[in-house]
Amino acid sequence: MISPDQTAAMRALLGPQPLLAPYQAIVLEADPARARALARGFLGPFVGMGHYARNLLRQGFTEQDLAGGGSDRLIDAVVAWGDVDSSGRTGA
Image 1 (tube, rainbow, N blue to C red):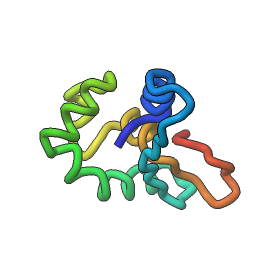
Image 2 (cartoon, rainbow, N blue to C red):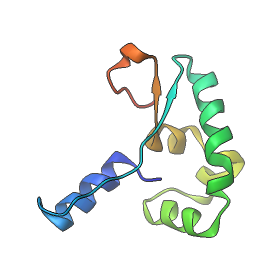
Image 3 (tube, one colour):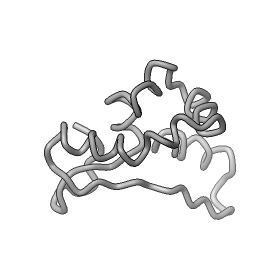
């Protein structure tokens, strides 16, 4: 559960050789409110777990971002959402 920015930072630290395989959650839904609600349903339990919460806080998210299953900012940063034709759009 990391943002693309965090993945890029890890790649810069590791260099080009080691395999880096982050997990990317995806919601196939174009409506922002529905996409975020679906993402919160999935992520909600994770953001309440200590190790995930600490990792997100290290990435620059706040306690407020973790509340309620995740703020729009958090959801948009760690979950790609849109329809099939969105070409990898993350968030709104």
